[in-house]
Length: 80
Image (cartoon, rainbow, N blue to C red; front, top):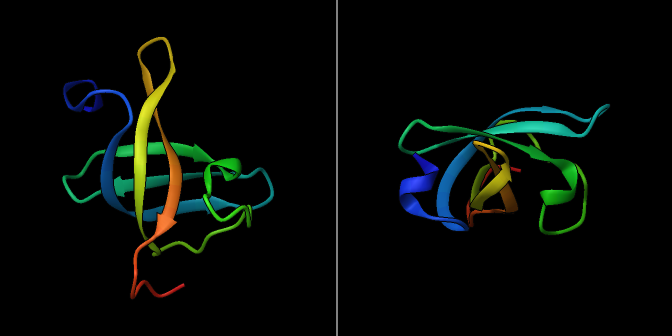
């Protein structure tokens, strides 16, 4: 679905998984699509984020046929 929205499309989502030991996580958008992310994609540079955090993220290409979340920014009022 991200390809229909185009590269770097902004989405609202919830962090549905995050493993701080390996720095990998997943967000699920409000429309139900899931995208992986690396801890370096967290915009504030903290390298950690709580599961359940509401975020705004950019979706961009990650490799052949894959998309990833980038520039994760917690939404105001999010329970972090």
